[in-house]
Image 1 (cartoon, rainbow, N blue to C red):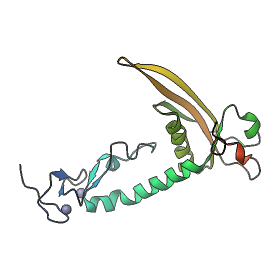
Image 2 (image 1 turned 45 degrees about the horizontal axis):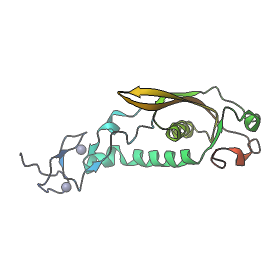
Image 3 (image 1 turned 180 degrees about the horizontal axis):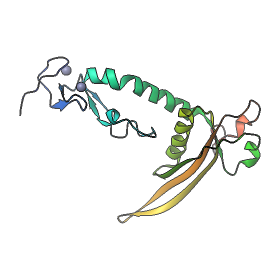
Image 4 (image 1 turned 45 degrees about the vertical axis):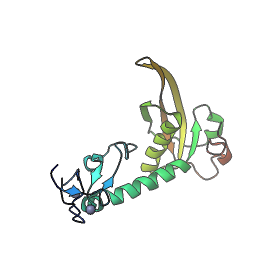
Length: 172
Ligand SMILES: [Zn+2]
Ligand SMILES: [Zn+2]
């Protein structure tokens, strides 16, 4: 095998190449991400889909974005979520024109988190009218459940949400 020299530390033990600049990078210096590492973004920038980054390209293209992604995820985990059948609880919350739609997700909780992530990105603190449909699907010979749904973001006025009624506090 061709001997590649890591562009960062000069070690010759590498077969990895940076997805952006294509320079060799050893395992210690490279930054590795899974394919779906940033999949919650509505549109994943091309440079964030490469999976392998040398240290230089990581600093220039990924570090800040990855931090922002984590922060958004953290906030998404903490926003209030109300389902479509909670009309009584959410009747005082002013609705926006925005409606998120996701057609396919394997996990119900992940689907809700994906909606929450979009809401945080758009500057909202709450999800309302969350409507999730589970459909059985045949995947080869195995039956799988696909979840799809819609949700809308909102920024309720103080006092317009009964805090303890969102699923974050009452997970049923
Ligand atoms: Zn190295
Ligand atoms: Zn690079």
